[in-house]
Image (cartoon, rainbow, N blue to C red):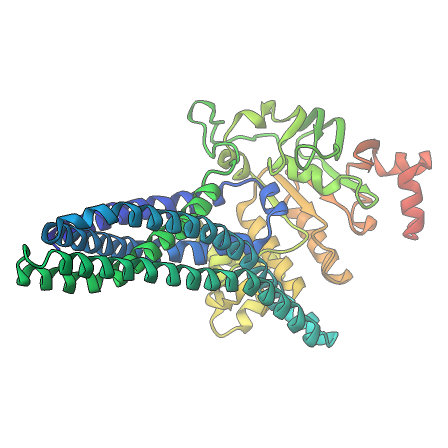
Length: 505
């Protein structure tokens, strides 16, 4: 009992520290994992690591280890008592131990694989449930509730197909362990009767009373061994996800750019090529272009031409397959990601908001005063809406900003960009979700407030870039045209065709 207590206390202290390190490593790794990982990994699998697997490590494994130690020392003490009282018992303990070991290894190996199958088949349930909750409004609109319930039931059934065999295996184990325990009681009693003339009756009774308890101890010991080996898979799975490939370092001390970088906002692509993942085709091929500081450049092209990929490369969401990008002659591949991304601003195609106050969404790091925020709201045409809310800047945004319209969410992203006011601004079809009147207001704000900034705009509406300095036309990942809008229209090339289709020529 004292041994178990000491071992348990030591394991508990070591286990808590190790679990915390594992949790931190998993979280830190996922925050620094490249986007390609999330593109290829189902969200349910990641949720499974952070929920079920972490629960197993925190709650299930420590108690399993304690019970294993308890049953192990209990079984060992029973064997010692029986051997001391009837020494001849050592003759049968060896074959029984060999049989027990064989049953244990056979069961544990099977159980471990069944546990893996059950864990893998559980992830699609989480993934489908998450997708269903996200798209619940669309599912109701199309009346597809029954279909999605059926898909969920099917995934649960698949999971149960893996879970049920583990219960059957458990019963298989129970029969064989009960048999071994009964054999121990039988031989302990048999040897006691055979050697009754030389044995102390008290010791014989003591030995048999202990032997009657051994079945339970042996049964639980093999179950705990199995549970330990199957549940340790959770550690293996979490460890795997905590050691995946990460992005470049956030800060490289010896390569930090000046605090006022970039001063001009010049962007140069030199023989630049990129692919989304290893093994895939290039999405941008040998780009060579230079955008001067303060230029307003519109980026256009057909679907799949590589417009959004080009902006992702600026933030190093995608790393170069060949060539380089330089901002104010500073190669962005040489500096830390935090130093790079903090100096660029993007208004994305899909606005991103978090659960919390409007102020937190605009200024998550409390870098600006309320006066600055109100000024940004005024320029982004959101001031009237925010003042109409009783909580003002403390107006609560639900998850993903669902209590705001898509246009309002886009304007929040504009206000966020106005607050940061970096030298380089990227607009990824930022006004695609707003009406024409609001679009005109946003464009006028960008022209006045970012007048001295370099603006790269992926154009959804061509009329918004007709007064830009230059227009870049991409076709199949290559530069097809790059000139002023007037010159491109006069050349009557790809851009002219797009302008004509839009009814602007």
